[in-house]
Structures are given as structure tokens and as C-alpha cells.
Image (cartoon, rainbow, N blue to C red; front, side, top):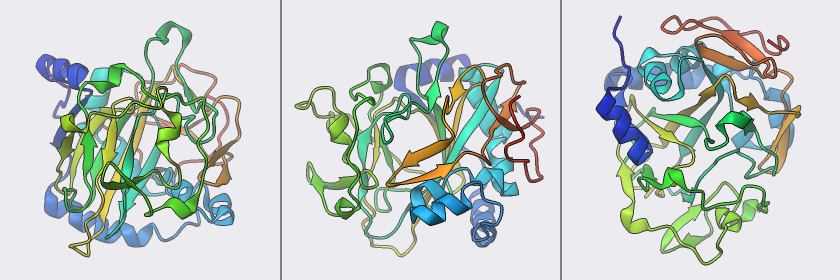
Length: 318
């Protein structure tokens, strides 16, 4: 079996820049074929973790969460050794995937604001992940963003500002104001950007500060490629220029050590003008075993042997 663990040099580069990649997870044609098949299967939300609450809220952002809990391909994907080996190189031998999200960008869509996420309290004001006290100098989540379609400067690829993961420029204890009427309606520094109905600038610690966009690097990726980065890294995306009819689609898996508490003292997600119950949610152990009784575990898997059957949502505390 191949080992995709980061080399010492790759790990040093990751710690310096805050990201690693792009790297190949699937061949281009393989990814295109898989997505043609899975996009039809994902229309069936009968077993989706948030099918009822998301429908009631009328919000697509939350309903894009955690489809790995009901889709076999996505379940395999978050456990793929090409991803998990690299994640474990940074996080250690015990790793959980606590969330996944789709990020579609359709022709003409705005780009995403420059932002950082440490506790993911940015929309609700309540931390969604809490690292243990002996790791108080750490924070955030390790995101692996996989391109399911072409991601380039025309279709709205990711952008990073290398090295910015060491300092938080935003205060997530502040609250942003949700206004869906602002979507696709604002320009910032000459670029159409927003944050799914929020304005991430409301969280700036220094209201006069601006990200140094002159240092930005565009993450051009082919279908099947992925990039791994700290959520505390300054990142954004460009608008979809609309010169092609193909949407840009990314799928992000979010990983933390099993010692991190996920959704502590909460039973629902409140974001983007809606809320969904966590009754059917559970974290997935993708490497090692679980050593945290505070987290609800949907399923566990041995690294390199991903689960391929439907998980059992809400099986209780591990």
C-alpha cells in the first residue's frame, strides 16, 4: 500500500506557508466520471443528515454540509489515504472528520471574502470546535479542498496569502449580520466578493486593516486535485467570470485531532439565516481511534480501509 505521508521538507513548507498542494487524489477523467454519476445520486436527500431542517430553512449552505454521512463515494473520499496520510502528518495519528461541505460557484457568481476561521463561531457566535486547554496555542481545522470540476482564475479558484495562518486578523466572537440581498451585489477592492450573505469585514479586529492582496496566490486545480490548508490561513476565491457554462465545484473535508471537542454543548447548527438539528450528525474517525468521550461518533474506520456503507447517524456518545 502506498504511503502518502508528507516528507520532512513538505512538512516544513506546510508549516511555513499554511498549505500543501495541489496534489492528485483522482485522475482527471476518473473525477469527471465520478461526478457525473454522483451528482444524480446526491439529488436523493432521503438519508441526508439535515434534510428536514435545511428544507425548512430554505438555505442551501447548510444543506450542503456532511453529505459524506449518506453518500458512499463521499464517505470513501474523506477516508482516502491520499488525503488522510497527509492530514495525519500534521495532526497526528488520531484524526476525525467533523464536517464536509460543497462549494459550488455558478457562472456570474461573486468571489468569497478574504477570511480566516479558528473556532467557526463566525456566523453563529458560538464555537463549533474547541481544542483542548493544553493546545491553546493551536486552533482552526485542517481543510482538504478537492476540485470536482475545473478551478482556475476564470471559474473562481481559491486564493491564499501564504504564511498568514499564524496571526488571526478577525475576532469570531463578534457577530456578522446576515443579509441575503447582498449576495452578488458588492464590490470590494474592485472585485465582486461576499460571504454567503454576510460581510466578513465586520469581524476585523482592526477596522482599518486590509489584507495584502499583492501577496495572494491563485490555486489553479484540475478535476481530482486537492489542496490542504489551515482554516486560519487567509483565503478567498475569485468570482466566476461566466465565460464558460460549467460551474466550479469544490468539496471540502474538515479534519481535527480526536481530542478536539466538536459542537460542544449544542444540538443544532445556526447559520445563514437557518438552523438544522444535529440529531443525525456524528463525527467520523478516519485515523486511529477515538479518545474523546465528549464527541458523538457516527462511525470509525481504519486508515486505508474506508467505510462504504451508510453510517448510523446519532449512535450516541463514544
